[in-house]
Amino acid sequence: MDITEIMEKARADMEWHEVAAVFPLMSEESLKGLSGDILREGLLEPVLTIERDGKELVVDGRNRQMACIDAGIPVVYSQMSLPEEEFGKDELASRIWSLNFARRHLTPSQLGMAAAEMRKYLSGTIPEAAAVTGSSQRNAERAERVMREGSGVLIESVNCGVVTLFEADKVLKLDKAEQTRRVLLLREGKIKSITLVSSPKPEPETEGEQAWLDAVQEPYDKALSMLQAVLGIIELLDSDTELNKYL
Image 1 (tube, rainbow, N blue to C red):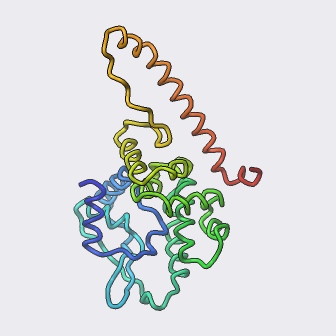
Image 2 (image 1 turned 180 degrees about the vertical axis):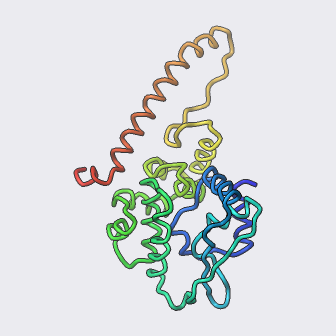
């Protein structure tokens, strides 16, 4: 099963509470790794649920739930002692964040997306939401733009760590269909960055044209690779929380 099929099976088994989204889903590769670990060691921590109007919803552990389904073993659920009505959504979101934060290392882009998601439940500013998650303010601002203007596939790709906020923010001026197309090309390995998509290569009509294309293609590819490396370095510097104080 691919990650979309696993997700559909998980939500059919038990629907997800919206607050669970404060912590991002794993990439397909990471999820497969967790599936293998659970298959070997078993599920060491149950999936946490909460009651809403007599219905159970997954509030923490979507990745563990999906990994169990992928591994073909029963999901173990554990219901919180109090129903949703006993919590404010800000308190519930903060609790889910604190439960998860120590479990996984998140990239600066994923922290930014978490800050934007957390802000839905906190009656505070972007800097306050960024402080809760440990994100830089700049990435939290980018994340809010991506969540507001990005396609569903683009948002998912940032949450899973496939695309950075720096890249996603650069393509928001494109329509959502084009955003999605570029992400799919990236996943298929046809491009290295969604911000750098070369035009289709012309088909040579003569042997001379083919020889010319062969001669220029290698230096072109090298130049493109160098440019992507430079952009990667700029992004790392831009995302560094400490350096942001001086930028």
